[in-house]
Length: 314
Ligand SMILES: [Zn+2]
Picture 1 (cartoon, rainbow, N blue to C red):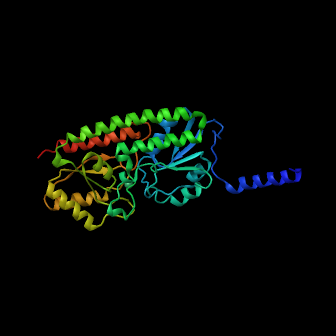
Picture 2 (picture 1 turned 45 degrees about the vertical axis):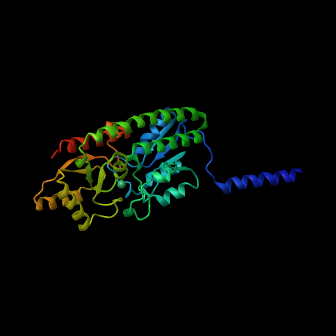
Picture 3 (picture 1 turned 180 degrees about the vertical axis):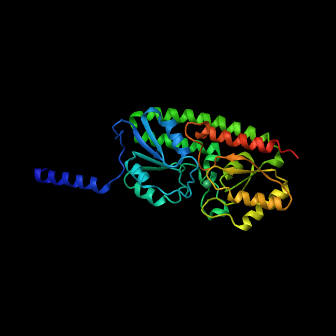
């Protein structure tokens, strides 16, 4: 090959590299030598920290009490996303207002929809979500295992030097999830069948109901974008009156407005329904607390349910 030709070839290769802009497998581009991971929800950030261990620095965008359906990325979030080595998001339209930004980021960076390896047949498709899948998969602990495995694989691919460790930690975490799944089943089975009804603000707990045999009634539907209407409230009040249900539940990341409307309507019909406690739904508890971890959050929810409903014998 003449030198002229080889210069031409080199030029072409350089151009291709520039035009492609494909995400490359990167090895800790940051000064601290750690892979920088940005996760949207707290549950994903928690899993990323457990699996990443000392080789990964994790930033979670949505803190305690934040509603992912309504969340819009701030300028600081966009900067974080733009410098991340790897971006983790839930997918299934959970991050409804971030779709465009995540799509844009995917052109340049590794962006992983952590629910994309869950078998389609395991995903709920409730009529109220207009043909889309229910995104709240973390409430079936056995489905969350797929997410954990997915993150482990994504880390192993992005930082090959520590691939073995990531896979090992993901496997160990999966074992914990298997034990937790069994524990939830046992706890729920100790609640009398007639009382296994969970009324809460929005329909986040569908997977929980499906996996553990609890009838779930959300006042607001799957997403929190639409507010509960009069009909929604009436439908729930009828059910509460019929089953003489004593307790309904508050969600940490959703307004209590619709629950209060239900309580007032029940009272007007002569039935007192109390708040059985606060459940973590789309966001976890404060960082540094037990409920600030996925395992702790699930346990908190199940204990709260059991306390309010198991004692509710009639
Ligand atoms: Zn939700």
